[in-house]
Length: 445
Ligand code: PMP
Image 1 (cartoon, helix red, strand yellow):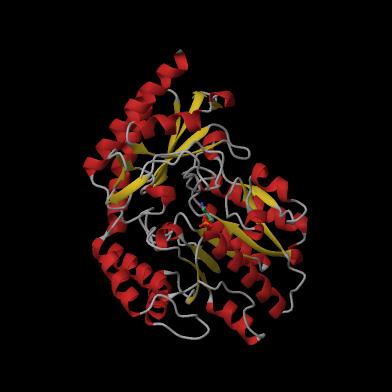
Image 2 (cartoon, protein in one colour):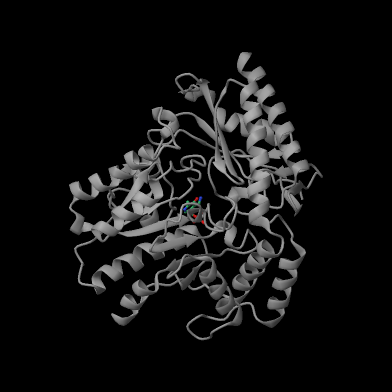
């Protein structure tokens, strides 16, 4: 099939793309036979690569047994097993798992669980959730209210209640040393200040992406930040929610990114890499005490029809088993370190690259006009689309975003599947090198 003259699909105003034919491992092919290296795993989703035979086999076996069993009518073995495995990977105490079908649904679930917990423990005045600017937590109205990016949120106010925001750390722009604990404390203490200004008794939770995703472009928190935030939340009875929709699933080198800092949340949410693109699946994992409070007070008033269906859970379980069996977290760490150092070499050759950052295989680089003051490229240049399109023509898929909140510049997420090898790294760097050269040529015309 080639692209039809007129499409009835309605997404965004994005230019039309070739029609996908098939995908295997880190590669995808369009219907004309052109091959693409999936340098962003879709949108940081396809963590174990495409068409993994063991996952397909597990799905086929489950499909032959049953594809759907409504969770209030039947327990299912895949759901029980996946819940147990997920709880085993989560921090101690977080052993209750609630399945959903995507990241926004997982964030909604966390908001509603936190709220019902507050009511259950007699703290009903806690209604507001602090989040960060910039951040992305999803497109449903609750998750969007927590998203720190005004162009996405403004059209929906006052349908959606604005929530308090604090700046996400941006040590690289503020000239601070991210390895110095004082930097982490500097940004974390903004949370305490915000809680005190808003009135601690009104604050329900704080939500944070442990390693930033599309919003900050793989920004890693400065030393001390995650621990200090935990301390502050505990001090004021504010629940800490980790949004690991993008960073969870192993691509930072640990299954949950927050494990890098021993910073334990009260609730965490996961989705993209959880079933790695094989089915829509996500989960909220919550501390058992919170769940007990809510269930004892009459039950959790929440749930999505498709959530926790046996096919999705069988796929998710097979993905987790594959990550374990193949040591993919370790591979993400090692291959990520190689990819990062190669990106740094590109940075040394291209002054237009202002920063390279990230952890494991959740990496990004940022383009700037001038590296000395990190001045962004002019908006009219539309660099974030241009470079992506050029790379696309060169058979490399990358993921980009333009300036968010107080941030500057265009950033590009480089996040190939966790199965990537040094050969794939070389191919990505070659594709980026060529694409940057062509981009600069275009700019100078
Ligand atoms: N949280 C984070 C950190 C995300 O990156 C995303 C998706 N980009 C979401 C939530 C929302 O997930 P979904 O698109 O699956 O609803």
